[in-house]
Amino acid sequence: CLPSIPSNFSPMSSEIDFSLSQRVSDLQGFRGTVRYIGEVCTSKDKDTVWIGVEFDDPNRGKHDGSVESSEGKRVRYFECSCGGSGSFLKPKMLAKGISLAEALRQNYVDLNAPLVAPGNTLVGQYANTIRGKQKPIELYGENKIRERQQISDLEGCTLREALICRCVNSSDEIPVLSSAKNIISIDLKDNLVNDWSEVVKIGKHFPNLIVLALSGNRMNSLQSNFPFEGSFETLSTLVLNSSSLSSWTEAVALCKNMPRLKELYLSNNNFEDIEKVCGEKDVSYLRGLRVLDLSECGVKAWREVSALKFLKNLESLNLNHNPLSTIGPLDGGDFEGLKDLHIHGCKIEKWADVEELNKLASLRSIRIGFCPLTLPLTTAEARIVVISRLPAIARVNASGVSDRERKEAELYYLRMVKNEALFALRGNSSSRDELEAYMAKAHPQYLRIWKKWGGNGESDFFAKPNSETISSKTILVDLEVFGEGSGQRRPKKKKIPSNIQVAPLKQLCKKLFGIDTDMQNLYHIASGDGGVEVAIELDDDSRPVNYYSVENGSKIYVKMQ
Image 1 (cartoon, rainbow, N blue to C red):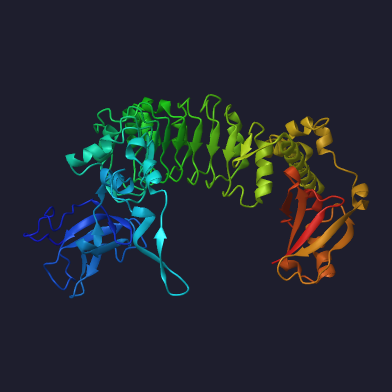
Image 2 (cartoon, rainbow, N blue to C red):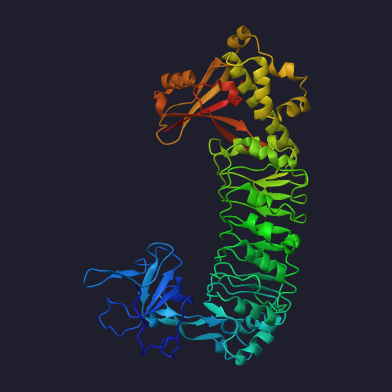
C-alpha cells in the first residue's frame, strides 16, 4: 500500500509548491512528471518531504517507484511506465518552470534596459594574455542587436527547453504578451507544458498565430468536449510530436477547434484506435488536412490507415516506423489527392504491396527503406526496383527521378527479371505456362517495360538462348581487391564465361589473389545516374554473373571480410 502524506504537509504550501502530474526538470535538465509527494521510509529524517519523479528518459531514474525498507520489505510509492525511470528528489533539486511571458522577457531585452557592455566593454570580463596580463573584452553593436530583438517586432520566436509550463503567472505579465502582437509562429519544443488550458491561453494572447510547435511536452489527455473558446481561429500548422497523445479522439478534437488547420504533426504518439474512432465519431473536422504525420504511432494494420481515405485534400502522409506489414487493398478513389507517402521503417515484406500503390492516382513521391523488403538489397538496387515497379513516381527518398535514371533503372530491372526467368527455365523446374503466370504475378511491370524498350512480345522475353552459344561466349572483366588487408594484390584482367556462376568466380579469385572463398564479398561496379558508380553485391553463389548485369568490360571488386 502507498504511505500516507504527513498530516502537517500542504502540497501547495509556499515551501513545497508541487502537485501530482506536474511537469518538472532536475538541475541537469532532465524532464519528468511528479508521481508522489510525501515521506519515504528509507529517509534518515522521517519528516522530510520527497518528490517522486518519473523521468521521461528511462536511463535517468534509479528505481521503479519502490524502495526496500529496513525490514527488507518492498514498499511501492508510485508506478513507472518504464521500469527504472523513477527517483526521489528533494524539492530544492527540481525546477517547477516559468511562464511564457517570463521566458520572452528573459530572451528579449527591452530597448531601454541597462547595457551589458557600456562603453563597448563587458563589465568584469577579461581575457588572459600569454604574458599573464588581462585585457577587457569588447562588444560592439549591442544597441543594433537589441533593435532587432524587440518583442514588438517579432513574427516568430523559438523557446525550446526553456522550462516554460504556463502562459502567464499573473496579470502583471500580460503587457509583455500584448507587446508581442505580431507573433505568428511559436516553437515551445521540450518544455514543461502539460495543461491544455494553458495552451488555450497562449492561443488567446496570440490571436494571429499560424504555427504552434509543442513537441516533447507531455500533455494531459484531451477530452472531446474541452472548451477551446475560439482561441485558434487562424492556426494552420500544429506540431505535437512525442506529446503523450493516446487516442485518435484527441486528434479529432484538435481539428474541430482549429478550423483552418492544414498541417498536423503527431509523430511518436499512440494511435491504435483510428478505425474505431472514425467509425463511431464525427471525423469530418479532419477533411481540411493536407499534411498528416503519423510516424511511430503504433499503427499496426492498413485498415487503420484506410479509415482516413476520405481525406480528399490530404497531400502528404507519413507512416514511417509503424509496424505495418501490408498495404491495401486500395481502390482508385482512395486518398485521391495524396502526392507524397512515407513508409520507411515499416514491416512491408512483399513487392505486391508496394505495387498496390499504383492505384493512388496522384502519388508522385515515396520514401521507403529499412524494411524486410529492401534489407536484402543495396540502396541502389532498392531504388532501381522501386522506380521500375512504380512508373508514376517522380521522387524516391527525397531524390528526383530523371528520365535518364528511369530508363537505366527499367533496363537494369528488365535484365534482372529476365535472368530470373532464364535461371528458372534452365533448371526445368517450371513449365512455360507456369513461368509466365509466376512472372505476371511477381513482376507485373515486366511486360510493360519490355514493350516500352523495344520488346516484340512475351515469346521474345521468355525465349531461351542457345545453350552452346551462351556457354561459349566469354567476356573480359577487371578484378580488383579493395579494403583492409588488400595489401599488394594487383588488379587482374580475366576472360570468363558470361554465364559463370558466382561460386566458381570466387574460386577463380581465390586462385588469383589467395583469398579463401568464405572471406570474399564480390561487387559489380555499375554506372548509375550522372556517371556515379553504384556497387551491386553478387550475393547468391548459385546465380550466373550476368544475372547481376556483369558484361564485357565490367569491373568486379573483391572485398575481404
